Image (cartoon, rainbow, N blue to C red):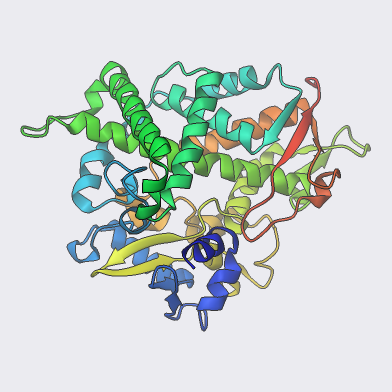
Length: 400
């Protein structure tokens, strides 16, 4: 039963919510977690805002860390940026300072240059595996100031996959795979140590160690590793995967222009690129649900359902459509914007820049879908819930 429900949670998408909710915005049981699920945008805005205030009665933050993710995969037991108020408050200044503040090490020009370098000799790329490796490498190097190679990034992606597998196992099951569990713990410590060294070398001024908190750098390093593994390391390539999929299958045709003019080819209309990414994150969000704990009771904010709510997005909410930018500013919370300054994603600008520059680079090259499951082109790439299947692209030579 456990695995049946886990499978449903990971694959069923909106259908799972609809089977557990009487009507949008009403309370209903979320069977595996025994949680209350909210799908109404106004209710999600209100609750995420309350979570963002870090009120004491809200509790321990993201309950997945305590309920579902076991200590074989999680050192501190909670997803870092969804952690309790005390733990989160100790890490947040570092995240804000290095991702968007004066200590920011990344730049649009630097990312564009490295993405071109990563792709320059590639004839094919796998959507999704190669995206994960690329994004991991970019995040380590441009956020943390590392010099991670593609081979090291691929090793990290393997570690990431193993952590995810172990994460969803009930704790008793980890006793049957001691070799993998011990290997993960060793890799956890190896990456934490690597990140600690990067923090001390490149971001020391963003770290303020208070008396009695000598483990502060280690705690931040764990938070960074957590973000590289789950948030940035999964969220960014997932959003990028979805953006490429909607271009490939024709859903995003209104964001394209004929190239060359009068031909059968297309390129992205760069003036519409940002809206294309926002609409993709609305219709096919990288994170479709956000779990919290309030007064000891579990709640789930069903973002995926809210982003398709007809009362907010119109009767065409189920369709891909480039909308006025004000609609996204007001109603889209793909990066937890409703959580306010303290809880919204600190890496939003970096994530969007990676997506934007990667899409611009493959658009500059020109590409076509190859070897999907049916051996057909992009029109066969259809969504399953909020996700898309994997596929590969064949890249052309650089075009003027």
